[in-house]
Length: 123
Image (cartoon, rainbow, N blue to C red):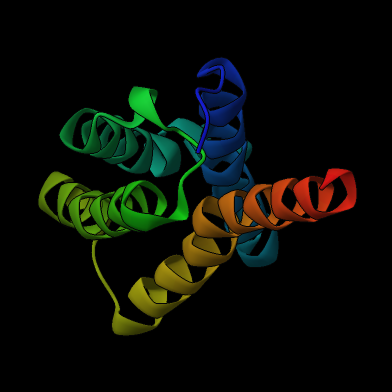
């Protein structure tokens, strides 16, 4: 990929995590005050994923950046949540993995597809 601004990718990943928490809390009728308790483990894990992959060099790449950020966000986020009293359930882990795959990897795949289509039109 070409060099791209980092901020749109940070915003897209952040919105993915915020949407994950908001949808989950809404579907379970959770207290809005607990929003930060749901968000922080996954936000911290995503930041670790960004650092691990050095995502700022190619933030919109599906592989390895998007997949690695997704994996780190899910795996480390679930661990942080469990060890800080948030608990763990297999069904929650599966929903987390699927939702965050669709969003964290999905927006990158969409950007890649749109960019390739635009390149084909101009070629």
